[in-house]
Image (cartoon, rainbow, N blue to C red):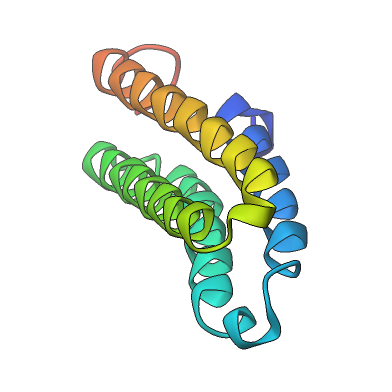
Length: 125
């Protein structure tokens, strides 16, 4: 088993690629400001899933990195909400991404709860 098999990883990776592409549509002066923050927070969602999985031998570390991933997901949603308000002409694509990140946040919470409840089962120790 690998982190690549996790639904949350697959979705987060797919969304990261979409975020990267969409962020390049922002005005030039925003590419290195809000666009950069958006790309970094989106990347952090995936990176924390991967790093947490790499530490999955240690229950508390794994859970902590899933919490970090969820926090980065919330940060990404916040950046998207700012972009939607600041750039209404581009808002439909960013609204779709925000909705997808809302879905991912729910899946991250469900998975974190599953890990907490099933730690001693399914070779998670």
